[in-house]
Length: 419
Image (tube, rainbow, N blue to C red; front, side, top):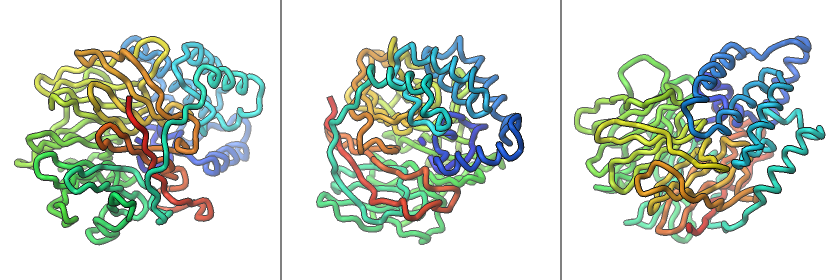
């Protein structure tokens, strides 16, 4: 959420959708269910059961069994099937991969019960808090609800996108914040992923709204809109995060359509990338230095796609490890850097990959259960430092409305040195 306040984008990815429900919204949903009666199901029950059926089929395909179990446990709890949810959750946590249900809105109603609290205590013994990051920048514009972050090495600037204000701001080396693309200048949709073109330093960004309208937008280095592009079909799509290749080709995740698209800047054509399995709310995306190996994160793992021959496979996380639920995903010296906020309690981690890029050989948790992991989303690399949005406040956004303005805080960008 990666990710806009998606309310209940359960038809796309249950894990991220449930995570993005604020405690207030979650409580309101539960109250409505109680009014209808003990046996009442949520309005999206049919969609959730459809997702359960899809994920059940992935059990024998996806190498991260814990991610599948966690997805299913969250879905069952959303349906009110608590006993089954706890059984699945217990099975997941026994794998000791790092999932922490204490940060999931789905399990709010179980907090304080002995069985649930014992499960959380065990997780926290295995995965203690890690505090390596420090505060880098603060923007006093509290209602940005930031989603994407990019670094311009030539100009030594960071670009920060805004869901709520529908604009992009720039942050200089002294931490001064100014508009790069002012709100409403071009009638932008909520702005999500943002990346620089390595060839000319222009800026590409994804925009989309809950209704399924989406654009890929292109700005020059001064913030002037060069053009905007949208798929020509009538399907509901949500461009979320993107990478730009050396030849100018843009590749973007489509979280609502559960696809990945290649965009040709010459023909302006969007072409779906074939993937060997169903994607569940594809979000974070990273491109290796070889300009060929693409990594796409979804609710149950990370899929590696060879852009030369379109072959694909899941990255094997190895035992006692998960790379699932990554909102932001980045390549750095043979490692994937991930902001994982779809695994319960969010964390930032680095995953060293094998030489062929197919499996994790070492995992390092960089930040976990601190003031900088309130609700992180994405980040940007500057040398060996990783800057990331520490408090996106995306859980306070419902569509285009801030739910509680009194809870808004200054946006914090944290930085952590990479191993």
